[in-house]
Image (cartoon, rainbow, N blue to C red; front, side, top):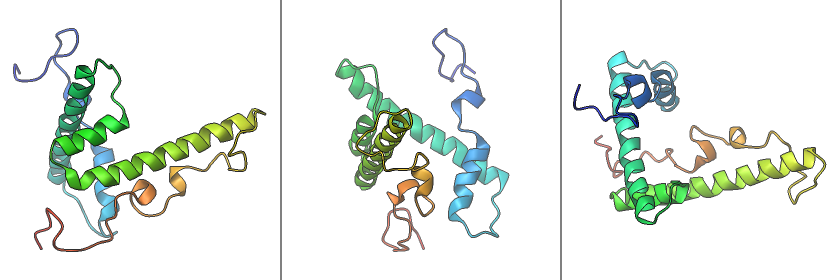
Length: 158
């Protein structure tokens, strides 16, 4: 398997470390399907390969940007930038909205944790359980709208 990337110590990367867990992939796929729909093992494995490769592709672009800027940490803004740089322009705005809402929730969680320790913060009226699970719909925060069944959407061949 000489075509597999090598790890930091020159070791080959195991498939289980290279791919997202198939149970997670299947769970995400099932969220968008009708309750009685079935997903074949082959479909899950194909999607597992694709999403893992896609994540590596986008992350690699974001990492290259960080390297050029002499930074070691890839952040959400770098990932959003990489989407645009790679031509995934339709995803940049939804990802930026998601990132903004994610940061709001994380800030609220930090404030709630601080207030539970006795240090009242600006959001001490929030319950400590407030967070992404309170969002409605299939996708966290509803940042990516999939309720539109418009046939003009890229990738929709119906």
